Image (cartoon, rainbow, N blue to C red; front, side, top):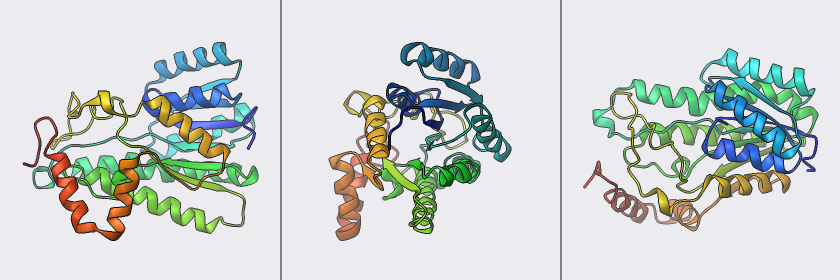
Length: 271
C-alpha cells in the first residue's frame, strides 16, 4: 500500500501510541483523522502535523464507548477527505485490581472502550475500507493471548478484540480487506497512570519500571510498516512471542512465570 494521500483514522490519538501513529503516518504523506475525548489537545496535534509534514489533519472529539460518537467520527472523515483507507483502533484503558476486590463497573468500562469501541468504529468505517481494500488494525496486547493477574477486565477486553478481528479477517479473506492485530510489549505511556483500580478511580501512578519499556514511537513505526506490508499479526517483543508459544505448549509453566513476574511490581497485588 502506498500511504501518500490516503486517509487514516486513529482513535486514542491524543497521547501515547495513538499520537505516535499519527506522526508516523503523517511522515509518509497520509492525511490523518485524530479521535479522542481531549479535543483541545487533538487540535494542537493536528496543527503541528500539518505544519511539519504538509498533510491535512482533522481533529474529532470522540468517546469510543458511545456508538453515535463513532458513527459521527467516520461521517466527519468521509465528509472532509472523501475516503477512509486505514482504521487504527487504538483507544484503550487498563486496570489494576484483583477480581475478588473489584467493582464490576471497572470491567464494564474496559469492555465498553477496548472492545465495543473497536466494534463501533470498525462497523462504521467498514464500507469505506472495503471499497478501498483498506486496513483495519486492532492495537491489542499480550494480555489478549494470556490472562494477566490483576488485569481480568483488561485481558477480557483484549481477548474479545482479538476474537472479533480474527473472525472479521476470515469473513473478508476474498474482499481485499487487511485485518491486523498488533500486540506491543509493555510500552512507556500514561496508560498505567490512568489505569482503573478496584473502585473505578484512576491509579495515578505507574506500577512498573517505564524506563525499560518500548517507546510509543517504536510501536507506531512497527504498526505502520505492518500496514504497508499487509501483515496479519504483529507480536513485537521476544517476551511476547515466548508468551504466545508457551501458552500453546507449556501453559502450566507459563502460569508460574507470569505469577512470578507480577510479584515484582511496585506494591504487588500478589506475593
